[in-house]
Image (cartoon, rainbow over all chains, first blue to last red; front, side, top):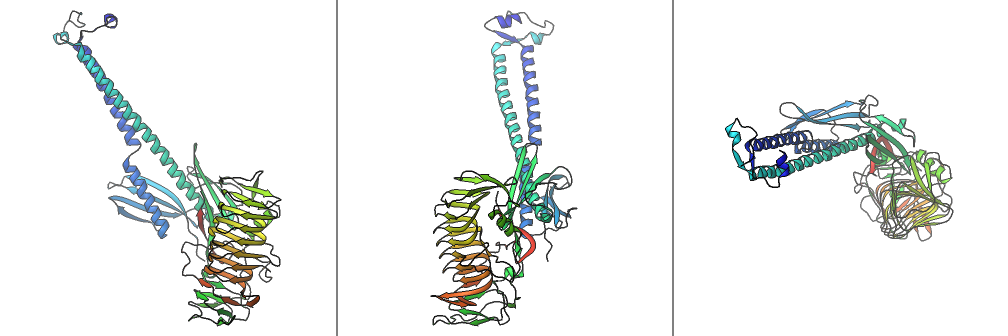
Length: 121
Length: 429
């Protein structure tokens, strides 16, 4: 091995050296891929952005129409629910939970808002 | 091929390949590792960006929820006193709320935070109009009808005296319309509706040099081209003993006060600022949103555009004090001459000139000379019409007062003719 570093030119490598190098490369590559997939799965995804936009849109519609009733409906193959409950501190204040579930019922995303609703005189 | 084999036992391992193969493998591995590391970096930074964005979105939602909380709990909140609130009772979403007076409106500042991240929203609050606020006219019952002359046009519900409307005659002109009013007529009370004085009192004390409701941060120099944030409890005030000419771009959390006069030129760009002075003049062609508080006069020139939420308020009105809105001017907001109380009217006068449009609400505990158009509501103690030097009481000449052109999004005022339902007049930040 000392000659390897000393000699200025290599004429040949043993098969074991090549195999070792390839094994190390493939291990590093597989590790990199698994880290990449893990990062991809836990972070940015078009799905999460889509669900967030979907929930924002449902909230905007609720704001415009004033429809604060609890309900559930299917939107783009995703089940969206809107749950409202009275805030313990004030009856004029509602806690609105808007969330998205997939077909298996798994929670994809949920957002919470407070909504002021004045009592009509 | 003369180098000694490392493992002599295995024939396959004795097989030698050209040195170029290892170099090729190393080269490929270098390329692969560069690609892999760049992919990991891209994924990492996109994740970081996404997480930051998610936190910002959540803080923004929490800040908006904080505003909603403040609207519901307004009566329990004191002016300029921060309140920290756990929004959902889960100890994960906290906001700091600050309620501040801002002229005839109120401001709610909501600041949500998580770690070093902050999300803030500021809303200008007002109230929704009640039945009177949705009507076009409230004229206290003085046992006389309201006389309509010329092209006077009324569309909407009107609260007037029992004798309702009649046709009048001024300067050889009678009533030129077909129908006196298109809408319901209801009987009004003898007194003008009561006005809520909390916000007016806050402005009045500021005018008198006292600072009870506002927490003032005094500016030593007049600010140029600055937009002041509404965050925090403080209100920025620039005060001068001299007349002030405003001809620059300024906006936000700023009160400009003079003990003599404030003049706003057409070049000035004002956004949401408050002007206080005995006399306030706004030059012809000005555009912007501004609240004016004066004791003697407010004069808006012709061809101006005062955007919502603007306000003209005449406090401590003396004889000859007036508010004039010039020709071809469009004003969106509120005009108030509160007078002394319900029974004692003011000596002040409000004049809306020809072809001027006031889109909003007017309260005049004095005389109202309406020659232009009102798209909204007017409460006036006394309507007058001027012809030459003659003054005709309880007359409306050539004015258009309608609710048909009133925007659905135009709210009412916190001062009078409102319900207990608050609404956001404008998102300031």
